[in-house]
Image: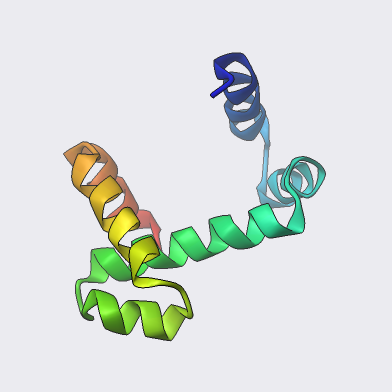
Length: 92
C-alpha cells in the first residue's frame, strides 16, 4: 500500500469539518464501486459486533458471500480493544 497516499487520504478525512464536506471528499476520491464496498463492509462490521446472527444468516441478509463475513470477523479479532469499543459506541 502507498503509505504516503493513505496518510494524505486520512489527513483529508480528519480535516473535513462536517459530514457534507466528508461526503463530497469521498465523491471525489472513491468510485461508486468503492463506496458500495465500504458501505457493505460497515454493515458487516455492525452485524458482527451485534452478535445476533450466524455468519451464514448475515451473508444471506446482506447478499454477500460467507467469505466476506469471515474476513470481516478475522479482521475484528486483530483489532485493539479500544477500537472495538469505539465501533460499538459509534456504529449503527
